[in-house]
Length: 156
Image (tube, rainbow, N blue to C red; front, side):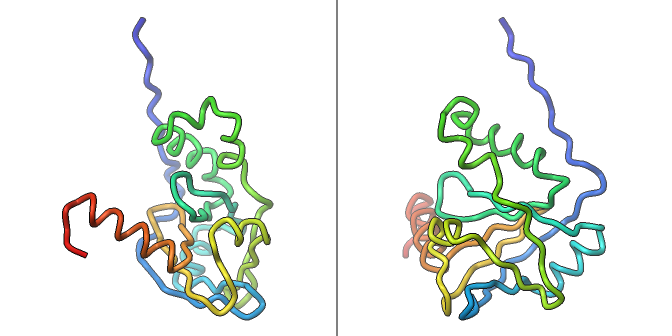
């Protein structure tokens, strides 16, 4: 029996984000998203983003609400075990919708911050990848980058 592959097409009205930023976690544990990211999101009519966990690493993902199901399809294609594992719900069902205030500040749930190792007065790496944003604690991002460099045979 031949498996039918369904192509997942990104909605044409989605945002295109690109870039890597380092931002400080405020003492009240909120994060300020860079102004150009907020402008792009708002310019595309996006008012809410969903927060989830990124499989395979200790990072969070912010995805426009209208693109969450697209992200889920892409991530389950990358990690097929998520389609069958009981724990997949932790990755495929987002936390509550998140919005930003007039200065671009967002609040993250306590458990999300604990999962990703995000702490007040530390740095968060904000990775913009096409239509979604990854949030990494600086230490976790460095550790993951080192593993990748070793796997690629680069000197560290």
